[in-house]
Image 1 (tube, one colour):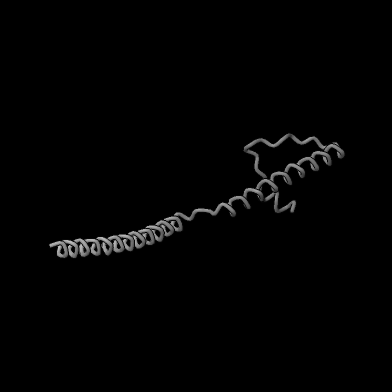
Image 2: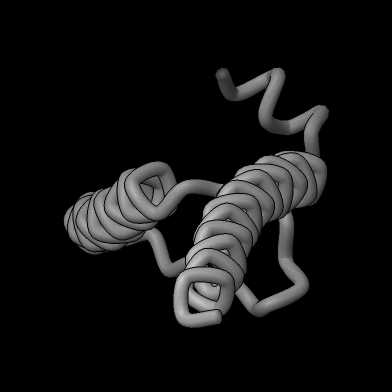
Length: 103
């Protein structure tokens, strides 16, 4: 009877070992499918990568600095010429026709 119960337990251990291997395979497959689906969702959201965001942020900062420098130069030139222009308000936008004529 000892040999029969030992063989029975050996078979049970082998089945459990096989089941654990199958469970690990299923887990790996699930992880792969989940990761693929998550990547697809993120692509569909059209998110910006951090590197791209930081590059555009730096470009905007440089443009603002250049804009401030140009405003200061214009003010200095206007002061030298004796032109008094009011500071632009938040709603003041140049007319596109004037821009075409000036440019």
